[in-house]
Length: 239
Length: 239
DNA sequence: CGAACCCTTCGGTCCGCACCGAACCTTCCC
DNA sequence: GGGAAGGTTCGGTGCGGACCGAAGGGTTCG
Image 1: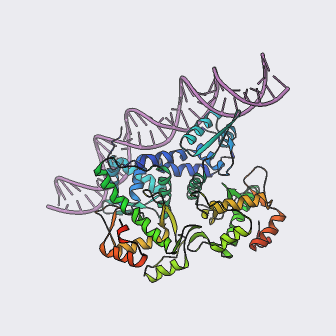
Image 2: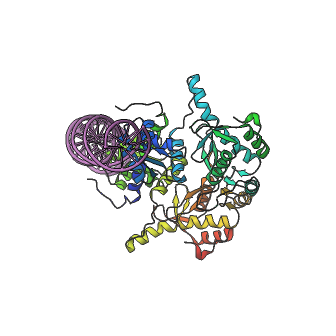
Image 3: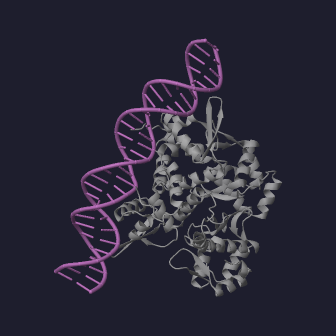
C-alpha cells in the first residue's frame, strides 16, 4: 500500500482515474469511433476495436460509469454515445496532442480512401477537414469570425447567422464559438454551438450529404452554390 | 495477443499511450504540481507525491520520453517542467473535467490554507482564482475582452494592452486569448499569450507577490491601486 | 414454441507495471 | 580525499486489469 501524504491532494486520483479511461487501446478506439457524434451499438464497437463482445461490454460499462458515455437501451441493442460536447472536446484535444505527425499516405488506395475524410467530415457535431477549414476561413475573411485575438464571432457574424436563418442555441454554458484543432489540416476550425448549428443546417438543407455511413461528407451542387452566395467561397476551392 | 483489425487505425494506440502517462496517481500528482509553471527537482516531486526517489525517477523518465516534460540538468539536480503551454492546457482540461465537484473545506485550517489559493494563484503562466476571475470580468465589463460569442480580445482590448505597456507576444501559434476553466470558480479566466503577459507584468510590477514558494499570490497595495486605475476593479472586491 | 441474435456475467489466465530497497554513480562541500 | 546528498539502475514482489470462452438472460422473429 502506498503512503498517502497530505500534499497528494484529492485531485490527482481523480485525474488519474479519468485518464485511465482513455489509457487503453480498445477504449480509445471506441471513443475515437464515437467522435462521429452518433450512437453505436456494443457489437459494432466490439468489431471496430477488434475484441470479443464480452470484452467490449466491460469497457463500455467503465466508460458509462466514468461519465464519458451515455447509454440507451432499445430492445436487445445497447446504444452508446459520447455524453456531451465537453467529452467530445476532451477526446479531440487528447487525440490532437497524441498525433502531432502529419501522415503521408503510402499507397494510392490509402490516399483516395483517406482523402474523402480529408476533404470533408464531421467532427462530433461540427464540420472538419478541408471543408470545415474552408468555411472557417471564409467566415474569418468576411470578418464574421475573429481568430487573431482569440476565437469568437463578431457582431457581424451574429447577424450573418440570423440573416441566414441558422438558429443559434445560446442557452446553456456551451461557448458559441470555439476553435477545434483539425487533425488533417493542423489548424483550428469552427466548433462550439455555432459550429454545431452550421453543420446541422448544412446537412438539413442538403448542402452536404454523408458518404455512406461514414463520417465523411461531400458538398452537393446546391451546397456549392449556397456557400458561394453566402460566404463567397470559390466553388473551385471547395473539396 | 490481440488481433489488429484494419479499423483500429493508428490514432487509438497513440491516444491510449498519451492518456496512459496521466493515468497514474503519482504521475498525475507530479503534473498537477508542475502546473505552477516552475521547474521542480526530482526529489521535490518524489516527496510531493509520497513515493521513493527511485519510483519518481522512473515516472519522470516516462513523462520526459512522452514529451510532456522537459528536463534540465544542473549539477546533481534534475529539474523538470511542463514542456509547453499546450501540455499545461491538457493537464488543466483533464483536471477540470475530472473534478466537477466543489469541495467544501472540512477544517478551519484547511479552509484558510485553501482560501489563499482560492483568492489568487498562478495557473501555469497566468492568473487564476478569484483574482484571475476579477480581472477577467473587469476586462469583459469594459469590452476589452469578449466572452459572449467565444473568447477573444477586442480591438479596444489590444489598445488597452498597448497603452498599459504590457507587451503581447504575437509570434508563434499560441492563441492570444483563451478561456481556461478555473478550478475554484468554475468559470473561465483569461489564458493564452495575453493571460501570460498580464501575469508576468503583474508580478514584475509588484502588483502581486507570491506567498511563500507556493502558487498562491496576493495583491499588494500598489497593485490594488493600479488595478483600480486601469480596470476599475473595486479594491474592496479584490481578494 | 423454438431458433437466432445481442448482450452480459463469470472463471480463469496472463501480462504489464507501480513500487521498494539496495547498490552505484555523480556532484558538491568540508 | 572523504563524506553527504541527489539521482539512477536493477532485482524482485505483488496487484490490477485486459482478455477470452462458456454459460445465461432478454428480445425478436419465424
